[in-house]
Length: 233
Length: 233
DNA sequence: ATTGCTTTGTACAAGTCAGTTAATTTGCTA
DNA sequence: TAGCAAATTAACTGACTTGTACAAAGCAAT
Image 1 (cartoon, rainbow over the protein chains, first blue to last red):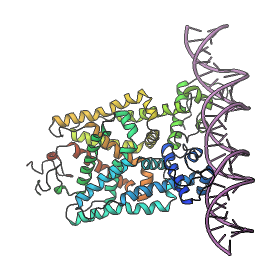
Image 2 (spheres, rainbow over the protein chains, first blue to last red):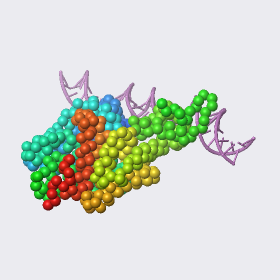
Image 3 (cartoon, helix red, strand yellow):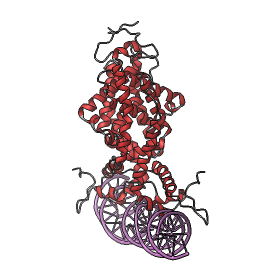
Image 4 (cartoon, helix red, strand yellow):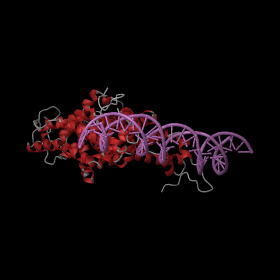
């Protein structure tokens, strides 16, 4: 399907370094996501590219170098997707709701990213440590939450001690686990929670939990009732 | 430290099939947890046992067979630990609180189990599927929650539609993620949430979230305030 | 005492896999 | 258009790894 870039068409071929690199990265991401760092095979990656094994070593030095770049690329792609979310025009509670829902769906739509991060954790974050890029990419990941929390506090809605990093942890935990552990969880307990309805329920609960964690106790709405139904005592 | 079983003491040696098997399993669990299925080396496992490579094949046929038994053993150990928790004598909210806290701590204390499950998920649950044992082991894992939910509903405290499986999912998600993604999360955002204080906070929030999800809205306490402070409207 | 199960040990076959060598083609620049 | 660097290919190498063959012997139960 995608054989536009970096072709060697029998006789005449065009140089396309960027395309070749990109092609290798894309194939390598699939292979590493599917089989892990030691499970992936360089020959297999090479066979699935439009180029040859030698080019992998030409551009990425060795297997670990390739894996490191794949890791960076995975973070880049996912964070880029997240950047498209515009929240500043929404009130704090709605912004937090949308962010949580978006994260849940976004992770769900990018299982290969989840698998790469799982694999990196299996390797105890050794390759992530070596990348300055990933630090930069993720520095921006939490700014959205900081802005929401600031606005929520200023509006008197959120608790004074609400911690953006903790909110991020909770949102990530449930959104990540939902994809990462699907195989074992549904293998053991069945797939009921992974039907469209089940997913909708889980997502709604995630939102409810996170919003209630951010809100001051007396501001907590009660599942559909308007805020303020329960009077401040 | 543990060289009681399966010794070949120079001349006279005792037969100890169970001990040899157990010793191999224990070493293999460490190696698979540390390096994954394809990353682990049979020769390395053999070197760390009190016995020889030949015995690994004698008892476990091949590498995948060994891995499968390690997976079962990991579940067996962790579920056995969980069974020791006695909740029937506690009121529903306290029981749920204790179960959530226990799970959080239990996962935290068994990182090798977490890693094995991560690895199994990387392999899309292929080996878990082949084991009847694991299904049996986990059937009991959710019974505690079912009992708690039943008692909570009967006492008029819990929502009528409270779902034990969902509660289990939420408890598992946060308890699991807390261990599985520690490397990348702290690599990116620092280790603040993984200090003793940070962990205590996360655990407290997990409990609060899960309890509030189970309780009827009008029964929800507000972080330390006695239940009923907010009148039913 | 016989028979089957368990254990030790070494050596090695067969295949896999990361990484390299050497030679060729393309494109840029002067 | 000559020359040089970048890009590309196919075959090769050497190390590693799983799993087995073979040889021998101790233990346990009937």
